[in-house]
Length: 611
Image 1 (cartoon, helix red, strand yellow):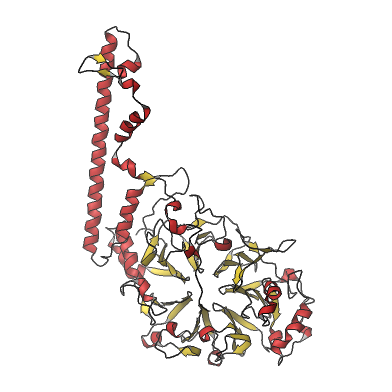
Image 2 (cartoon, rainbow, N blue to C red):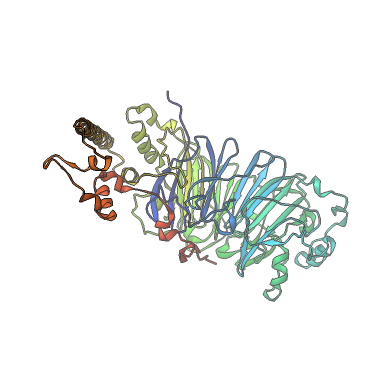
């Protein structure tokens, strides 16, 4: 059997550069499209709002999408053809340890290493605009952009910012938010060394990052604090200028500061809120923005200003918990699936927004065991243990119901039949190898959702890799690429015979072109032979001929014409160009400059957010 490979597929909206333009020719890809120009051993894909990160088994990272604030981890030049912003490109950065976890927010990408260190690139925003990212250097100023990964410097002091308060002062000053709780100063971190901090888990929201330390006693938070999502004390808008900068730096919180009697079991994030589960009691608490009830604490307040208990999830072991901008999904170890928030994304008919968790029993009723869940801004994806991929979302009906994009626009779990799109690619590349079409050989390795795009990696695919080298010295035939796109966009997926027929026609066409070029080559060779014979005959006559005269010898008049020698240069060039083969006219350098919608000045690059 052939050696099988992994391939990335992507679909959704690409108006902000989320989709690689060399493979996705439309603003919207309604069905999964293969991105073959990647290594065979890619094993993980993570999506931010408008960017995508791909990891290989040997920890190489590739990125593409919108590079706002340097979220791609590399410098890009939108006006050139090197280091393209929107095409999958290797990140030239070496981490000191193996990668344990990758998380993405709207404008940041964070990497947790097995040695407990955390690296980050990009930055944070809030309702006022750009917050930036700490440089963690000598000055420790805020950077509005970072084009490479920076190691986060954690400290047991409450703030790493020179302008911030001392840890004890910050804790006592923030005590008002937890007035019914007591903070035990004996648990303070005065004897602990910052170099001993080891992070074991990280979670990203839209614009904040939460980290859990090895002892399970401390969490570190950083980013946007306008809705208390970084576990901060609520501040009024008139105090926002000073406060909002302070919380961009990593802040350290001991579990007793919140009045908890047990250590942190684990940490989770929605789009703009934060959740913790405690050890022993397994109680679950939420804090942050509560738009549409997305915190799940049975309150209609727009902001949950301190941790509040979620009764429906407490004393139950959480497997996964994630969320979008206005909803949250939780998978328990017993395969129960809960969801709350915006009624348009609940995956079920419901009269109002859900301010507390509701059980989504679709998968249990249909005897599916949920293996993995992930959330985009306004949609959710679920993978079952038998390899089926389901999705649902905002309840729109803008697309043909037979497309994959229409699935995540419905407010009910619907299957995304990724198998037929993978099968189509196998047929193109291995049309005589039906053994590869067995469904058990095709599985999803990883999948993720962004603001308006989705991506997944399918394993065991023997893909035909298109050589698209990026550089000024590379030219390829645009016509051949166009043919590939037409074949990729063929909607007749079920008729395998028609697919094979198309491929045979293409092969026949290639054979005809090959014969034509061979005949043309022989014809040119014969003309050259005749010219050589004419030259030798004239030379034997003993006449004083020059090379230029011989070139313009006219056999019909038996004279040497000098008139043609005085032709204007542009006329000679016209004749020269006219003699070229037609295929040469289609060769050109490919550049994103030909696509206006990928320009930095395009107003569609900034996506409005719902509040």
